[in-house]
Length: 107
Image 1 (cartoon, one colour):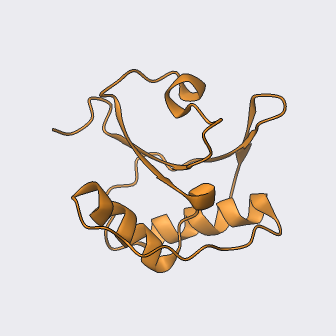
Image 2 (image 1 turned 30 degrees about the horizontal axis):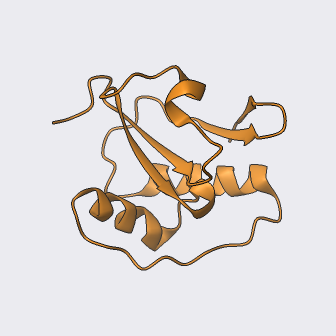
Image 3 (image 1 turned 90 degrees about the horizontal axis):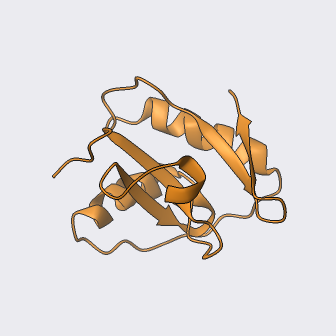
């Protein structure tokens, strides 16, 4: 069943990150795809989608030298992905675990 808000969220798998609470979402409102760093790589994005359908991906971790730039790179990859055909709203954020604040990252 598709999420009621027709939203997909890619987030870090860090256990301190409560995606639903941070974004004000309720159960069933969004697909939440979690991986190391919440990073979209060319292959990882396809694997994340496949993971939602039951195919286990092989993960490749990336280093995070500039977190904001990593988010921008992920946003560009989603924009250019042949697997995402509808782009009504594409936004990226960095969550500060120390303060609990979200900071939006723009392209």
